[in-house]
Structures are given as structure tokens and as C-alpha cells.
Image (cartoon, rainbow, N blue to C red; front, side, top):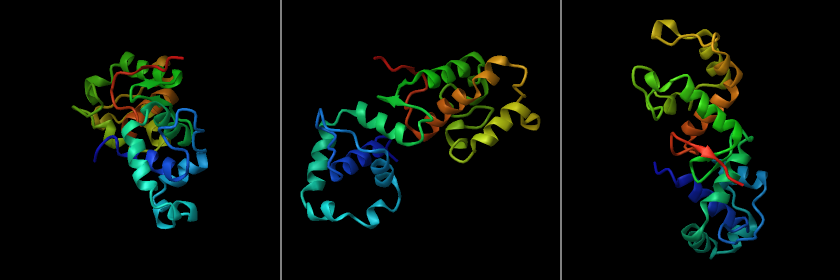
Length: 187
């Protein structure tokens, strides 16, 4: 599956909803509109305005070609409950950046790989697709000694930043954060 497919879907949905990704001063789609467009059943019942506008798909395709990925990507992250905010695939909010720093400081890459792809430990890119936040926290607190995963309760840094670490890893797993190394969103 292509990594830019969610962005393509968002731009197509935004064009169908009238927001248009390529309009510089167009208002961003509402959270409800983005969530509706992203839902698996969104295409099953097209709205009357979208169905009546036969040129909307062509306009959406044109929008994708010239769409700035910055605003569309940020809208996707904000609609997902604001767990993380990502711009251009590698610029993240301050909390998510702290999660990345925690990842690096704890040297998690020694077992899970520099890109979270897995080495002696499992791939977190795949694992966090099904692992809940509660299971993630439990794993860090209790460890999985039979699999070589230590408990991190003695690491004040990891425990203080457990939510930020989860946000960073979840963003990687979701494909919103496209590079393992991230930087802060600049103002």
C-alpha cells in the first residue's frame, strides 16, 4: 500500500466536501467531515451535492497534484483525537518530539530497530497496529521477560514520557510519521 494513499483520500474527500486542498485560503474541513470522509462506509452513501457534481473527481485529482501536503497532513492528525500532529511526515508537535527523544535515550532501537522495523524485538510498526495503549503501557511497566523485554519502571524518563512515546510510535505505525527521525514543527 502506498504511504501517500491516506493523503490522496483526504484531498479527494476535501474536494468532494468543497474544501479543496489547493485553495490557499480555503477553510480546512471540519473534524466531522474528515472523520466521515475517512470512514470505511463514507463512499457507500454519497451526499447529494457530491453526487450531483460529476466533475468533482477530476477537480480532486487536480487538487492532489498541486496540494500542499502540510495542511492536509495536519488535518488528518488533528481529526484522529490529537494524539499527535504531523507535518510533511517528519515534523511533529512538541509532545511527540519528546516521545522520539525518549525512544532515542532509552536506546529502544537496539532491539526494535532504528526504524521500528524489528530486530531481536518485534516490529513496532506492525505491533502498534493492534496493540492498545493500555497493553503498550502494561508492557513497558511489567516487561515481557520471557521475550527479553525489560520492565522500564526504573527509568524515570520513560515513565514520565510514556504517553509521548506512545504517540510517536503510534504515529510511525499509522504511517503519519514517515521518517524515524523527526523534528519540531516550526512556527
